[in-house]
Image (cartoon, rainbow, N blue to C red; front, side, top):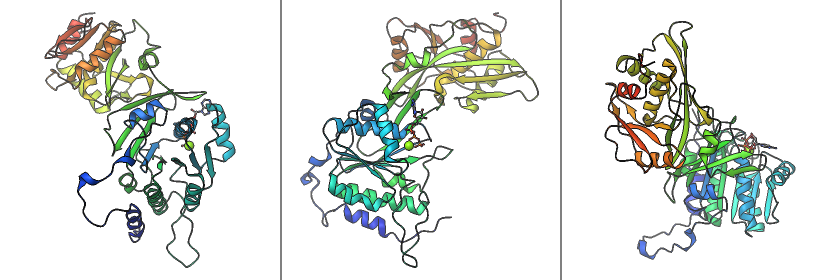
Length: 430
Ligand SMILES: Nc1ncnc2c1ncn2[C@@H]1O[C@H](COP(=O)(O)OP(=O)(O)OP(=O)(O)O)[C@@H](O)[C@H]1O
Ligand SMILES: [Mg+2]
């Protein structure tokens, strides 16, 4: 339950937009101010369909320690390096800390300014003084819109509370619209992945970016959840290292670099992440059941799809797993939840259960139906193109699949049983 105050701040934000009072022909509206400005960090610009739009507000969400501050400091430095004045409002870290990080990441451009503190009311003055064309606020949960004098006005609570976050976001959005300065807000996410603070925050801003990855791995994924100035399908790939985040030109090197060969249970699957294809390695291991009911452990995979695939494997493909504990995981810290992974999961488990390794030049894509049939998946040609590009030469695909890229042999299968039989990992084939 959240106490709702009057809508005054939102109304003020709308006022600040300077919306014309009367209707005008759409054709007469000027569009000069809306051109995107590239920041200079290629993968960041790619996700934003070119760069940041002046006066727009972007919210960057991500788990603690994933690299939000690092990414945005690099964006600021890159923009500043091309001669623009930029401002970092650091409410979480001291100027000293930020300076140390900036030095670790590279040069510290003279037109990169920092405002230390948590009071958003200090911002309009700073903007008037510095005239930046990009502001980063790190983070929206740690700034405050000042506390009212005792007995006067409503209390806003501590920074991070719903009312403070909303009030601060309102003021920052009004400032961005009024001054035409592109603004990026850092937002923390809660354990279940939602942005902390009011849900309304996502409606208030123009763009919501999500920065993801597994802290134990170097790979980081940046995607747009909502974008008012372009499509949301793009994916940015970064690698976290000593010198900060670098663009990943060849994800296959990072994802498949340490793949063992000749070990049963391993297979590669070209997954779609937005509009990008990533080859990921899927591994399965089976052990005799330690205790009933048998364990089904899915790491980076959808638990429900693993259980469904195991049921089909036992009932339709003749690979019984009901007395085995099954562990399945995706390497590299990537999460694969699409049904297109079913066939690869089924083959990996069949391979682990029979002890027969799958060929290392093989990928598999297909959705498994409850009758054991293998169904068509989205973007199959793209997935196979990418698999061929990184050196795979054979693919297990649904029977109805169109022709594959040159140099790629397609193994068309109608059912999961046919797939395990053709790859020699059916029970009785050992
Ligand atoms: N000296 C270093 N060398 C390599 N990587 C480092 C170094 N210092 C920090 N890192 C990486 O940077 C990450 C922290 O990045 P950053 O502070 O940008 O994250 P954040 O998302 O802003 O976190 P928070 O939510 O706490 O603000 C660390 O988890 C670590 O992976
Ligand atoms: Mg941070």
